[in-house]
Image 1 (tube, rainbow, N blue to C red):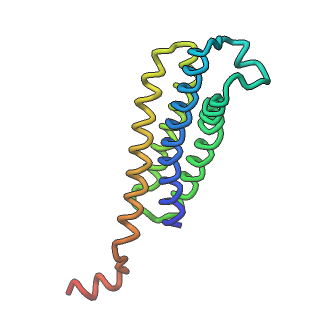
Image 2: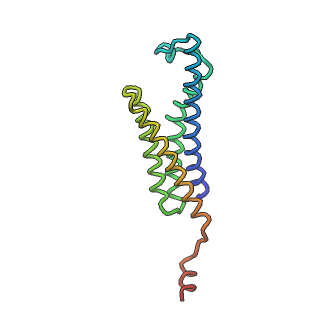
Length: 156
């Protein structure tokens, strides 16, 4: 179960990278489209038509951030109870907390754009926490496990 915990923590970190890449891809495409005479307003977002191909990046960012990453973070928390890694529950809980905060900042950022800066900052915090959780699991998995009876026998 340590390997599952470690893999899920790394997947959360990788998903943060996907989020950044998807958003930049979408915004770059939007900029190119606007430079070519396109007009981006509410009707574009509510339309079933794709105004520019890179809009898929914005869609991926939304779906990934609202559904995929929270689901992986929940699986990380569940696996933390079975992983037998010191601090695993705490770190999985922190990752989940940062994911919840990230979703909230993303949603609130539509009304208060300044929260977008905190959304970006929290993404870095989330990435760091996920990497730290995974690396802690790796360190524990690499260290030899000494049974209590062996400790008593070797200490005397």
